[in-house]
View 1 (cartoon, rainbow, N blue to C red):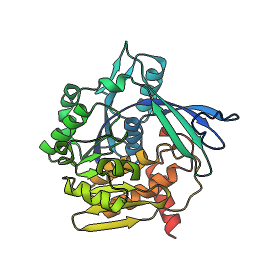
View 2 (cartoon, rainbow, N blue to C red; view 1 turned 135 degrees about the vertical axis):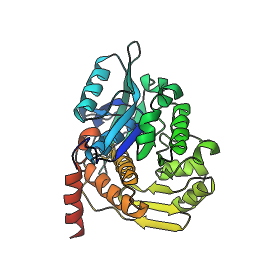
View 3 (cartoon, rainbow, N blue to C red; view 1 turned 60 degrees about the vertical axis):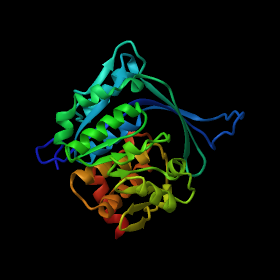
View 4 (spheres, helix red, strand yellow; view 1 turned 180 degrees about the vertical axis):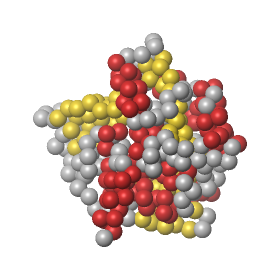
Length: 310
């Protein structure tokens, strides 16, 4: 499937763009501890931009709704997204505002991460900006959002998606309480175990998923890291394992999964088949460094799936 061809599935992403400042350590430091000897690198990230790049590399025509500042970080981010073929008409540059910055610590055998995100242009994405993209949303096969932009903008996207009968996928990260009015507009909610627990107060992922279905979500996918994910729908719960890989960098794995889920939804794949493919893509992404740069191509995921199942 060629990039941006008329036959490409259309995905709209509402979300953040950040520059990741990453320090890779032998292990994650504890509070008050100084860890020497880490390796520093800078990479393009942000949950919205990551998911947009993942969807584009999966073969979709992607429109990104978001914002950066007028600084060097913002110029670099926009240039990188343009190279990926994203439609950036609704991705604004706010001249007097700083672009998003994420400070990331990586460490341990499993390359787990701790992330802090600065206030930035991401916090100024508005419902009006989202509504100005209604024609793109109406033409889309799926809309995906996260919570690194204001909740009002996310809600506006959900309302427009429902109005046009477009599947709305929400990755509730960073975790925060969500109104029932939003959850009832969600076709698929994609939290990790921590986020599912925070949203419901239930530690067991299956119980949390059932509670989120009861709150109004049409489907719930709880990601379980290296253990894969579980899919909860009104017909039952399905657990899917992840292929075994040697992780190098787990940053962006969840975003990779969400981007591929959006493409699968736009292609009208059943959720079990969609999730199996998305887990494969996310598993492949952790074998490379970086967030956006680690997002695999459609061809790479097809090859990986045929190899891991053979």
